[in-house]
Amino acid sequence: MKILHRYILVINLCFIGLGSAFAQENQGVVVEEPLETRTSDTLVDRNPTEKYGLRAGIDLSKILRSFLEDNYEGAAILGDFRIKDRYYIAAEIGRETKSFDEAIFDAKTQGTYLKGGINYNAYNNWVGMSNLIYVGLHVGVSSFKTDLNQYTIYNPNTFFEPDVRTVSREYSGLNAIWGELQMGIQVEVLNNLYLGMNVQLKRMLSQKAPDDFTNIYAPGFNKITFDNVYGAGYGYSISYLLPIFKK
Amino acid sequence: MLRNGIVLILLIALIAYSCERDDICAKSTPTTPTLTIGFRSNDNALESKPLNITVYNKDSTKAIAFSNASTINIPLRTDTTATVLLFEKNPGNPNAAEDPEDVDELTFTYTPQEVFISRACGYRVIFTNLEIRNNPGATRWIDDININLRTVENEDTTQVYISH
Image 1: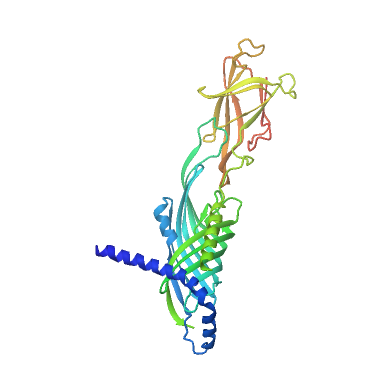
Image 2 (image 1 turned 90 degrees about the vertical axis):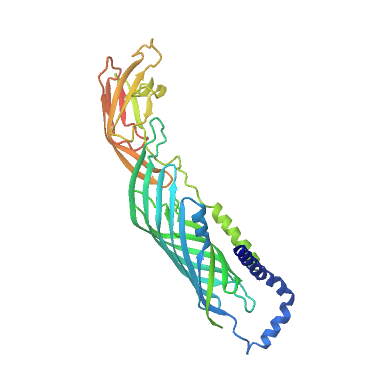
């Protein structure tokens, strides 16, 4: 019973946090003008409120997908560091395992990836708030291996039985490098606690594929399709800001 | 603005998700080829001579029928180095003027080679060092077998000519 109460408390806190994050805007519109002039009057001896520090967290979508999808397993930690008023250095490190049980092959790719880049916050915050709507330019590198377990010779003629071959081929030392355009938001739901979501559009720059097979997936990049250098992805995150100094 | 941002990002996520390509092997992609056989006249090796023919597998459980064909395409087994097929001329016609219901058994031997095509099409097999043997039987309707090309990697070329 005690635990249940505690859960309800936490859930309520989350809702209050979310509510206040969204509500402030609307309330603000009414009083925007007078507040603006006041702050300019007291600009000189204003207390520093802009928080600078390291924000670190985990990717929730990867954890959720690991539970929901049988053929996926992944985890990632991510973070950013504010370097200028609107600029952040961002990085992400993770690992992913993805299995493909398709009509013509059964294979599994697993490996790790690292992404890094710069985020630009386009959101005009109220004094004391630090939400983000950002665009980011990132570079990703991934190192992985693919196990080919079974494949069927592609034959449009069905006179003979399908030629299914069970093997255990391991293609290791594979890699991929890509550029990534990220768009996302980070909302402060509780003091220093952020919920974030983002979408990623990627373009493959180079990849090392097996000689007698192909790269079907790259951790961090997502599915690789034939004759196509573009990819897409998304992420949900929860992170905590460790404030280092204020400006 | 924050709310607009959320809507925009959800929209982009939706577009990105729906735009993910499905890999489908295009019909125009060369995959595992069949063997192309042309029929010629025994009297004039340059003249094509169509016929009614049915091709069976070794235990006659599967058949492909061709009528009045001068060129046929037959499959080769990809999982082994030989395929045995029965070729029946004028099937179901015991009163045919030439070779009525006559069956010849041919053994095709070759080296199958596995080639990777693409993610969507997977692997195909091509055949090299093709050789054909007409197995002994009571009567033979096939007079001669000429191998034009010992490598079977597409269906654009007639690899074998059979004269009858």
